[in-house]
Image 1 (cartoon, rainbow, N blue to C red):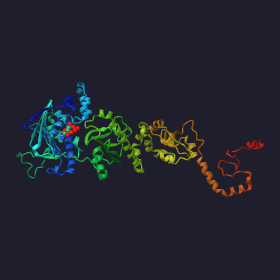
Image 2 (spheres, rainbow, N blue to C red):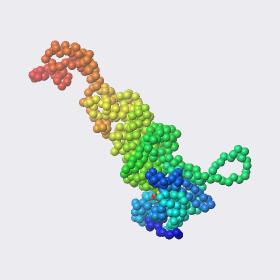
Image 3 (tube, protein in one colour):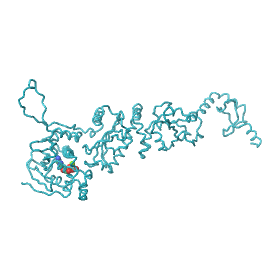
Image 4 (tube, protein in one colour):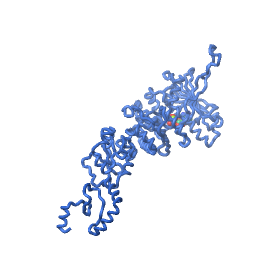
Length: 570
Ligand code: ADP
Ligand code: MG
C-alpha cells in the first residue's frame, strides 16, 4: 500500500503555529513530552498485560530508548509499549486528542495564537516534536495486532501528514526526529543526558540512552595506539523508580530518607515525612518532608521554596510555591497529580481551581504531619526551635486553619518558669481553674524582661498561668488573633483587666491546708458557739488578728458596721 496524504485538523495547524511562535526558547520540552508519551504507552501496555500476559511475552522488559545518530541528524525515541494501529495513529497524531485542549485552541483568535503566554494552558504533547524537527517520522505497531499491521506516519508539520501500512516486527513506537539545524545540539550525548535526567528521573520506566561504551584499557594495552572501534550500548540514565507511586507500607524508612536527600539535596535525614495518595475527583500523591534544620534564608524574601510538581509522574517544575501557604514554606517534597495538564505553567497554576483544591488538601496534610510530630515531645521541641516562628505566621495568614495552627504553637509560660517554648494552648487551658475563662499572655523584649515583669505579680499571687512571649513576631501574632477554643486572649498589660471573679489560688490552698490542720479546734468552737453563728471557718485573710466575724456573703464586717446592723435589728 502506498502512502496516503491527510490534512491535519485545523486546530493542529493552529497549535503547530503556536509552538513555532512560543516555545522556541524552551526547546527541550519536546524530550519531556515524548518521554511522557512513551511512558504512557508502556503504562497502558503494562496494565493490559496484567490480564493478558501474551501481549508482552515476546519482549517482556518494558523500556524507553533514545538514540542520536549524527550521520543522519536524527534523534529517535523508542518504546516497546502499546503502540498504535493505523486508525489510532491517524486519530491521535492528526487531531488534538484532548477535547478540552481542542475546544480551547478552536476558540483562539489568530492574535492569541501568536501570544506565547497561552502555551502553558494546554498540553502541547506530541506536536512539540516540531519545535526541534522539520520532519517527524513515526513507526509504530499496536501490541494487539500482527507484524503486517505496522504503521509509518510522517509529517513536516506543514498542514499535512502521510500514513502507510508497513511490516514491523516489534510492537511499540519509534518517533524519529529529523533535527532542525538549530537543534543539532540534541545529538550530543551529554546534552541529551542532561535533558533526559531532568525530566525522567522518576519515570518508573527505565530510560536508556545509546552511548559510547567506556572501556578501561586492559593491562598492557595503555600505550597501544592502534585504533579501536567505538562500541555503543544502551545505558539506563534515569532512576526508573517513582518511589512515591509505591504503596507507603512497602517503603522502608531508609528509602524515604535517601529519597529525601536526593530530592531536596540535603545531606541530613528529614525530621519527618508524610506520604499520601488520594483518588477520586482530585487525584494526587503527595510526599512531604520536614527538614532537620531550617534553611538560612527562611526569613528572606527571596527564599526559594515550594514543592516539586509532577504531573502523571513526569517532572514539571521545582519550587511550585502554589501548593502550600507561605507559613509552611519549610515543608519540602513533591506532589504528583493527574488533575493538571502536563504542560501546566506557573501562570496557569496560579489561576487553576485544581491548584486551589490541592493547596487546601496539602495544607491539611502538612498540618496533620506536624501534629503527629508533636506527639514526640523531644522531636517536637527541635521542630519548634527550627520552625516555630514561621508557624506563628499561620494563624494570621491562613484564617481557615487558624485554630489548627494555634494548636501547634508552643510558648514559654510562668508555669514552667523557664524560657523553653513548650507549652501548648491546650496545656494552658487544661491547667486553667474553673473560674478562668481567658488566656493571659505577656509580650516583652526578651524572656528576662517578660519573666520579671511587674505585671505578673497579681497573676503569680493568684496562681494564674501567663504565657510569656518575646519573639518579634509574637506582638503581631497576638495583635491579630482574638481567641482559641472559645477563650479570649488577654494581655496582662490590658488596662481593663478584670480578675475579680478569679479565686485567689494560693489563698485557697492555704485555707484548705489550715482547715485540715485545725479541724478539731473548729469543731470545738462550733459546739461552744452553737446556733449563735451559722458556720465557723478557717481563713487566711487575717494577718494580725486571730479571728473575725463575717457576713453570710463572706464579706468581712467591721465592728462599726456590725453595730449598725444590730441597731437596725438585723
Ligand atoms: P496526550 O499524551 O496528552 O494524550 P499527546 O499529543 O502527547 O497528548 O499524544 C497524543 C496521543 O498520541 C496520545 O494520547 C497517544 O494516544 C498517542 N501517542 C503519542 N505517542 C505515543 C506512543 N509513543 N505510543 C503510543 N501512543 C502514542
Ligand atoms: Mg503526551
